[in-house]
Image (cartoon, rainbow, N blue to C red; front, side, top):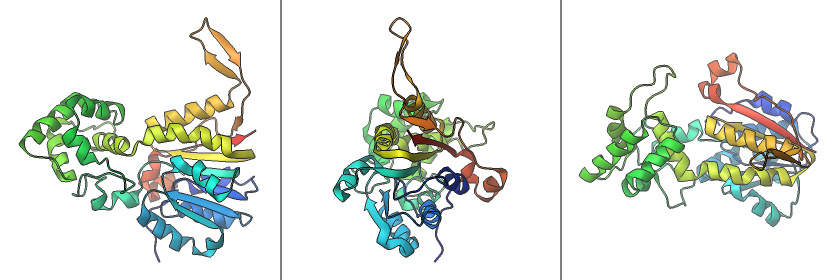
Length: 310
């Protein structure tokens, strides 16, 4: 059986956990199980491998791929935000390793019915978890112009957020916007090509809607401190991000956990001492080499940050 979606930074991930003896590992973003397969091969000492994914179809693919290790697997259809709750249900208090491969996978982008991509026409959905109520269609057709503009500005980092939001609200007065193709047709005339970056002008707006629908940044901010707390001493956390909003959150939370000071510069420039709880294994993020980028262009924007619990 061939499996969709090429996992990024596999060698860097394996190197990040090479020094560890791992009994319990959590993969918060299992996807098609690519990283999981490599980690399970490299660490036969693993007794419990807990994998989370919001997409039931992805879990089905991963289950088939990881069949040789099925006695060690706990595959859970849930957002990784709730991983600690599920660990409690399994009677697991501490873990030796955890990884997160953030964002949307190429496997999901290639499914028009998911509504993530403007390259293929499909319903304006964008839910990673199909059981959730909020869809991109709801945001586009029911939210105020001000709120849509905020989504495009804050989550999409779209410089023409005002014009884009205005165009969406004007178009929906004529008829509801229900497909990715219809939204693309509305936005294309008002968004200039970003020749310097070489990206499609629709990319940032679609990114902003996807992040909003799935609460991606909020979930990330919630889960990282919990992940650090769950690690055994010497345990490691590895996070792959794909855009600046994610990477900024990861960098700031991991650096704060590694720092020995509270930044309280707003109170007379005083810095209070605190105990660092992690070591930064990567002071600068690891990135893909030219060979990987040539084989998998998606890896071009991937950044890996790793910490170790003290």
